[in-house]
Amino acid sequence: MTRVTLQYYAQLREQAGASSEQVSTSASTLRDLYAELQARHGFSLPIAALKVAVNTQFSDWNRLLAEGDTVVFIPPVAGG
Image (cartoon, rainbow, N blue to C red; front, side):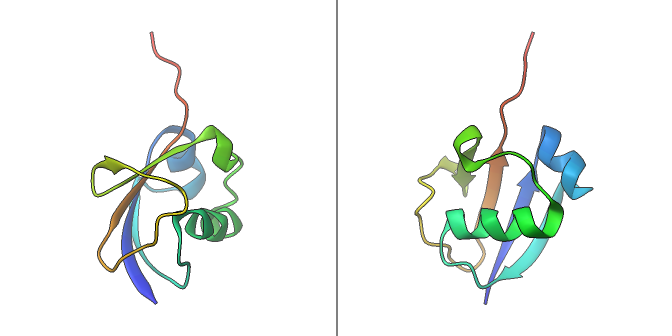
């Protein structure tokens, strides 16, 4: 199991009911982690609609998770 910190914004924060959480996951990639979180929190946004950052750097969905990573899922947001 890998322990990571997750940060959520906008719609994902609302669906998760929190702005952040620490989780232990068996997921090996960011893609697998998001699928796990979709099942847990009912996230409705598909991966194609999101960007992801790890430790403040934009990342590829196939990146392997490492112990202590901070992962931010970034949904599309309307600005004005």
